[in-house]
Image (cartoon, rainbow, N blue to C red):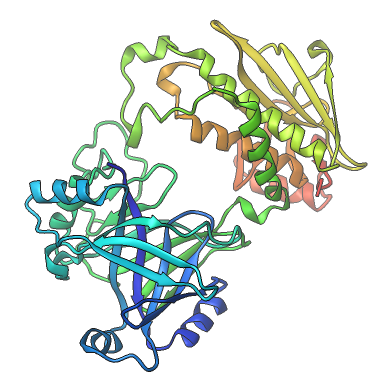
Length: 460
């Protein structure tokens, strides 16, 4: 049974006024349609399934539920999506909950499309513990706007966090190893946190997190959204604390991702994705540091890089050439490449260099992506190829994507001074032997520093 966060329901008095508030905050809110029971909604959503629903009674609708809704403001419900509602109900019954029988639901969109689902309330729809209802989509919505908000994190301060944790665990959500009853991590989806976090239940090693441990209560719900914007914001909208952060869609090169995905689907053949073998930061076994059970799986990274090269060339942004690996100079040590592709764009841009190297048991296992000549390495994946350092295909492919987006976005890529170097990343910078790397990059961008600077124009 698969389960994930689906949506948060927020009661508002007037949909038009609510739409103006959210849009003024830079968050798109569009009409979703009308339910048979007399309610209408706005949807805040992007390319992923999770979304926010702002709901209000229709102007002429009447009834006890609608009257209650008119008197409500702020977050009133939330949903967990399951792939099999009947299986989910059985799991909750076994865990001591009392989910209602499934009921059909639907909504007619402004375009006339009928969207349908099945739902069930838990414990009769009581708000005790702010328990979610379950939803199984039978005719789901398509993706939202590609530049719309991505719901990354829902934080709740419920009346009974332990009871809510029991429900989420019974549905099979992935519990964090340090806060197994307070933090639920959905790979590639929306994380859920229940406050107060308290102290970590498992604290061997280092917990790389700064967490609150007090029992103070604020808003019932907080949302973290990713948007293609330049700066973060934090404000309260309709009783919900909403934080936005910039993501890679703010870079023009991210517009190539759909084309890359299309080429990747064609080139990958039967190469499979694989999950993170150490979910939620689980420690690796000692023997994993000296083995790689399936080195061939890493061929997927080279295919992803090839998909980027083909998409760049197909878009008319550059030309690609396979060159003798011995002719390529790298700014940092990389494994000896078995093949190297150099992609050159218009005048002023830096060439993008893709090196592919073998490992024992696989002809193409390591990928290095750099810019310039010598090529300043933006990413080299996998880190070492052992099972202990494997973070799963989704994470590794995202790092390849980030390197190409950064390479095509131009600007200052790196600043070198002998052995000391500062390298820009998609969302910051890293350095070796430099404490004030941000100043190095700023000086290079303003022309105050010229020696050792690797910089170029944007490709798009």
